[in-house]
Length: 403
Image (tube, rainbow, N blue to C red; front, top):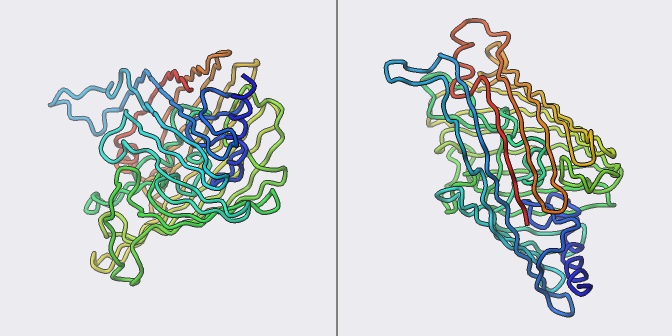
């Protein structure tokens, strides 16, 4: 038994200061802190192989207002409700020669190119300079960079995941602010145990495309890729990529970060999308707090013959507190001007939740309720259009198992 524990610990230690600077997570899917599990390795420890899985099953309820519903087709206010499997991830991670780390995971709940959730290897020249190649998380947004199985609420902020509203003649162009997983290459490292950086080139096509489809920009004459970077400052040491873990109730960490990206000729070569994000997160014993603000500019290419630029801003603040050793209460307030800064009006989206961590079996139960409100719109039409496709009332209960 002691031998397996030593091998497991040797698997964990070399992964410090990875692209998201995680202390305890090899794969960005589930935290492995304190979970020795099943690991295969050589006696020297120069090769370690560790399988993992995460399964999430959710019950969903969504109520939509009448705007956008066609009663002639018997469309109901209650839709997209029932049971779902958001993630069914099976993967493996490991290290080789004390220099190369690797990870591959399949999400069986997805389809198409998104079936391949992650596939990358990482070469560590030293703590200050590392190179990652493959499919992995782009360096943008604390919400996305948090370990998948460690999020405060079962649903990400809608201000990151919802497509923006464009003028009706341009509705084929519907980017969202979050960038998520993508294929690319990234340099990253940790300086003085406090400063992290990530700079990378990505396809800019998202998690559902695993092939080379890009060209050269007609306007700027550079490759039509996603250019992204992130700088973080962690004065108390590396910030764990968790939003709540009952095994980490004695942390004292804080993080500030800024990120930016330019997606050249995104949306079928029609737009150039720029993004800037500001991040704050902290863990203080039983308390977790985080806040983000982000801005996106959508500018059309010359071939579209559209001179207008559209700007969108959003952000959220959220917090969690362990009211009992294995019970975490959660709150979030999400804000988004989905219709752009040229028009008045915001979506304001408060959410409340609770998490229960079962003892000794890696089960986690999450529940949340969210309301999508609208405020400050000039006209009723703007108000009605702003939340098209979004549920006014939504509730989710999610049970997760990790190994």
